Length: 230
Image 1 (cartoon, rainbow, N blue to C red):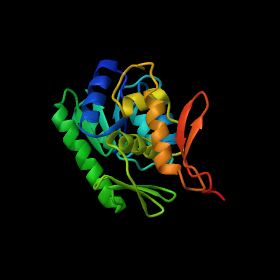
Image 2 (image 1 turned 135 degrees about the vertical axis):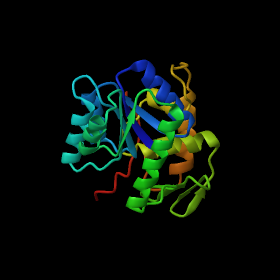
Image 3 (image 1 turned 90 degrees about the vertical axis):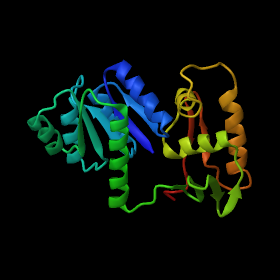
Image 4 (image 1 turned 90 degrees about the horizontal axis):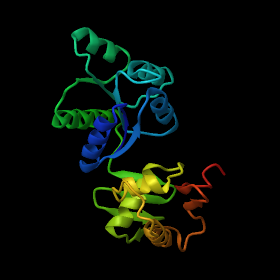
């Protein structure tokens, strides 16, 4: 599941991001409302977690803007403002849940899980498969097929492909890959990513007429179906 966390308190943001990643989620981070709105408009997320009081654009204005643009991604609002009126304002703005600070991480995690279950039920979309063109991942059985042919991947290659597919059509940088796949906050200055990406491309694209994994020179990598608009 791909989450967007919008929180300007960097210490709190890093703590929440780390805890959510350890719970199995992919977590992107924005540190102000304007950037959070931009990411939510340009990328596809399963859930947004936003602080209410943010620089440049407050959390409730952010949610209202998304709802006006017909973005229906579930939103969990976090706030130190915890009166009944405050919670009502948060829900009326378009939030799906409202959690008052301070809170236990276990409660936040339970609310995230509940919102994702509700969203999946409303969409009636299975959450165990990711598909791009003729490439399909089954997250439950940890299997990958392309055009019906099984592709054997190591655990790390599977995680790398999952990250790419969750960010399909989006350029992912080395930093994003190091944080999202290896959980590293620094670049070890090795060819770690290049080696794994080369093996993954061999497994996914070799023998097929149309490659899906592409290098964006000077920027990173992207997985996309270049024939989808043909």
